[in-house]
Image 1 (cartoon, rainbow over the protein chains, first blue to last red):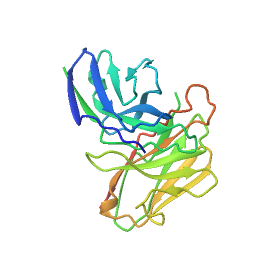
Image 2 (spheres, rainbow over the protein chains, first blue to last red):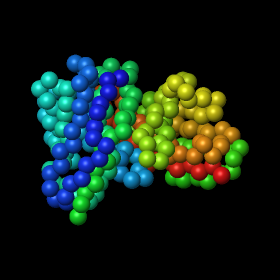
Image 3 (cartoon, rainbow over the protein chains, first blue to last red):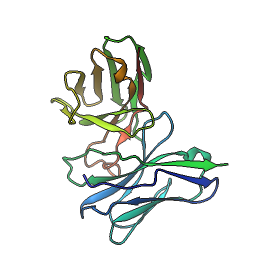
Image 4 (cartoon, chains in turn blue, yellow):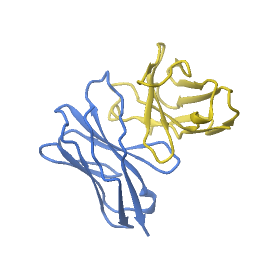
Length: 112
Length: 120
């Protein structure tokens, strides 16, 4: 599986936007970029995913670089409930390969 | 959204006993479920892929005779930790994916809330 690189930790003030970067320089042309987050003592939850174009949903936005070697998860207005570990994961489009390989992720701390 | 449940949410057992953890997809059928293990301050490590009606596929280094997986129906997979020891104490998490073709959600995996196992 292609690897991703994320900062170990980030801090942000409450009610401000947060930009979480992810580098994936070895991404293949058919890899989807997935983001999941894990709140303390819970299972991960899906945040967003994309292939080439930027994506928006009710939780966040995903900005994908033109060369697809990096992406940024954007939380438009962070709240205390967004404090979590955020994982950027590449997933092959081969439907026979559904595994998600979790890296170390970014621990996001929200400052009140 | 789709819901995956786990039971129990936590369990404490004596060394040498076996513990069964259930993973259920509550509102969708899942032909494939996944089992992860997470030690404190670490990331999730995939243990095995559970396929309904067939043998599970274990990741390298995971003992199949110690971590028994049964996926007997499209909504239930179980993980049994046999002869548990203190080093097996961990947070066990399952996930499931709706069937291919489910509109808009087919690439999303849904995770259970986890089961915290403590072996004394």
